[in-house]
Length: 151
Image 1 (cartoon, one colour):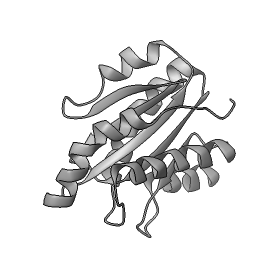
Image 2 (cartoon, one colour):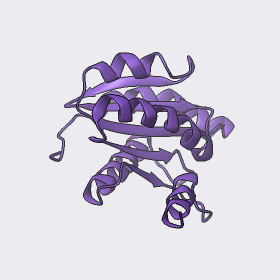
Image 3 (cartoon, helix red, strand yellow):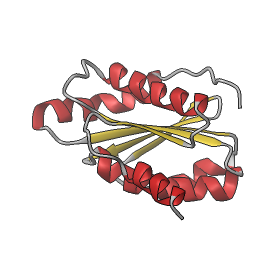
């Protein structure tokens, strides 16, 4: 899959209200970007996310998901449903970048840029999902990868 070119302004606009809520009330927000070449994916994922979350097509096979009131650990759990959908529809030709809004993020654009960076890093490393965490503990997916190595 070649490197996508897309406009992330739509994602930044959707994130602006949640970003402000995060800064004022310290409510967690996580952002995922998904690159997948399948038209059926939009409708299927739209039907399978919470009513409080946002899912938006961003152009050039890129989608954005904003998980409101969800920290990175909760977003990892939620993204498993998206992965199952993508596995069934996309023949494993998809990539996901996932980040949480952090105190160091100066704007919703900086959060979006980190999500895009995670996606690009995953694509470069041929990893389906790339999670940028500020915490030191290993993610569910890294634990899962480790366990698979020992089977």
